[in-house]
Length: 306
Image 1 (cartoon, rainbow, N blue to C red):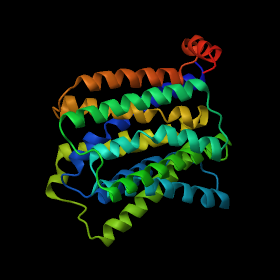
Image 2 (image 1 turned 90 degrees about the horizontal axis):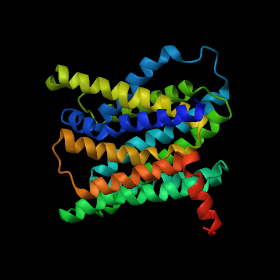
Image 3 (image 1 turned 30 degrees about the vertical axis):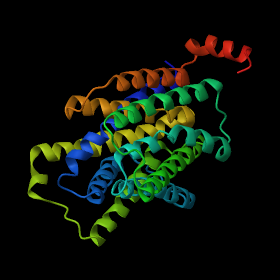
Image 4 (image 1 turned 60 degrees about the vertical axis):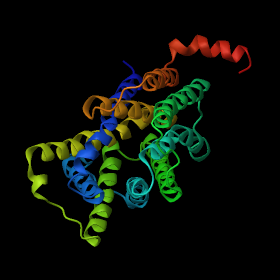
């Protein structure tokens, strides 16, 4: 099995894990603020990853490059939380569907990464599928789609910050300058430290009686290990072996998994639009990441001048 195939399998795995983040957040936010949760998640992940950090002494350029890079993800997390305080979750989800397209644009102009026709087609099909999953049920239930303009801007800025973090992570790691665990550790440490400072300034509680129960602690542990430590560290390894444009299709998978878990665990309604949108997302991801199976289709499209 080639490294690229392994990376694609790993991408599917972490997309499923990240897809659980919405359900996990709903549980954790019942007792703690977003900043305290962010501190526990990222500081805990940094602590668990610390024994695996490269033992050699880090040069000055390690800190000069990776601290600003990590701050991009910090901005992503905090801006997203702030945005959700005023805008709707549906609006934030719609904005999030632009991530692969923004990644495609940034990777082309910032790190000069070429995107194949199959990737562009796959991203477009996946975008249509995710919009069907989000928009049609909201329209049917009469929900607000646009949200608050200030919140939408913050969510959009969070998207830009995450995309820049992903693109430059690909650049640094592909140059073999840094090990994936080093960039992940720095991300955890910086994000956790910033969240701690904000939580302390706002005088937010770090412990409540409900936090000390077994179900809550188990959920928090899963958030630290499952949707922070494993996902971010493996993602850094993934972008070393495949293009960041291809890796960005994970956002479509995450959305489908998240809504599916909402149906199964939170008893939210299952709609035909979810089934149709999911089929398009799977098709788009398949085209964007496949090679042999899509070769004939692409050849036919190119012959027609598409």
